[in-house]
Image (cartoon, rainbow, N blue to C red; front, side, top):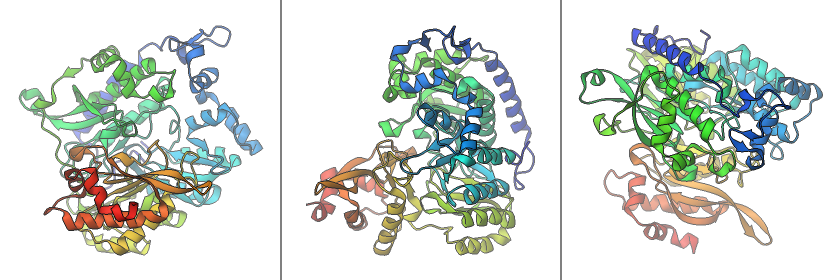
Length: 587
């Protein structure tokens, strides 16, 4: 067991129940690993001379360019090419730009003439040693900073081609990897940042996330999917993990009725969330024991690999496969790959998930371990400089158990702080320039990479988000949380459709050129507030955006009902009524 997998000082050894889960993982994985490779897929091709003229059953003249690149050369087999590019200090060209992403290496020209490295952190956990390693990479080989992402990864930027081998070696030495962190693969496996320490949770999901990561790492057929794939584990505590947005979401529950079920914790399975395509994950009608979750996830990923659309990238996500074959058939195909029967049980037989508090990961929180506390640290738009990364690592050593948790809201949680040191830790966090009890606006601020690091983005989201929140905090006083998400393009990496206020970056024509601006959406939400934001106004120049949002929030404060949240306020009014609040600024 490496440092990343070891129980933290506040957790103690694995319980008997957790050991049983892990034994179940081994049995489940042994069963699914016995399956034959997919006919027509990469494992069944003997070589160029005998390769079939189809790819996963699709004629070669119908597959997408990305599928052709995977067929022509498996991206997992390009280590010698990576070494050669590093030796020559040469960026990849053509199809290799895509293949390098399988190793977490993104050549992001023209935004930056350099690589971005995306690091996997299953269960959203890393040690102080690992954080120092990432800081060292950023300082010695990168741009001097890192970004926490909306999947709880950390990304490092401005890495020269000559450094990519050293970067990957440094990761390996501390138990980290970037393999499969990009392109058509299962992305970082997430769980609650308070998993294992939340007194309200039904089950600690960290062993599940880690076991699934090991399953992925040791099964080549779980790479090279039709498109990217997201999986999360929700333990049912106060803090969720935006399960609504995942291709597969496991949600802990207790059952009513049958004694064998009512006695333990099981998982409901939600499928096909992709809010950028206006889809939420939906319960698929099965109940899974904890020890079977990894096997079920792997089987579902294999079904997607075999049957997902490889002819149209826009239709290659799991939701479109379910549209085509139906959930019932998808579960039948999943069952064929399992050594145990799936249990079908309607959600009405299970206790509904308790309400989620989207801000419960921020500030000081009592852990279920006596005398220990977690402290959620607000990281504006997830950007951390090297000095701050090193300070966070030292913070974890000085006040905690050497552990940090990343969140899908781009913040960081320090765990296992003894009660008599909480105040001192809060002061140390403030000395770093961070807050441990964020304002109502800053604590809910999320932004994608933006056009300084992503060629798809129309706007400089991170810098503009910081400027925006500073202006709003100076002029607006809120006593209820409001989250604002800025995303630079329709890919919606910052999930603007499910924010209280979602901002989609656009280029606005002006005087023969263009300026940066945003479409504004309001009233989105997740979990018990599930719903897509509605378009309020289009093409707002960034220079005018702060005044518009100030007017909108002032209208909320003035006209809300007692205790009414912003999302409830926005949904209580039709769009025209909301537009009236900002009409003088949009005329």
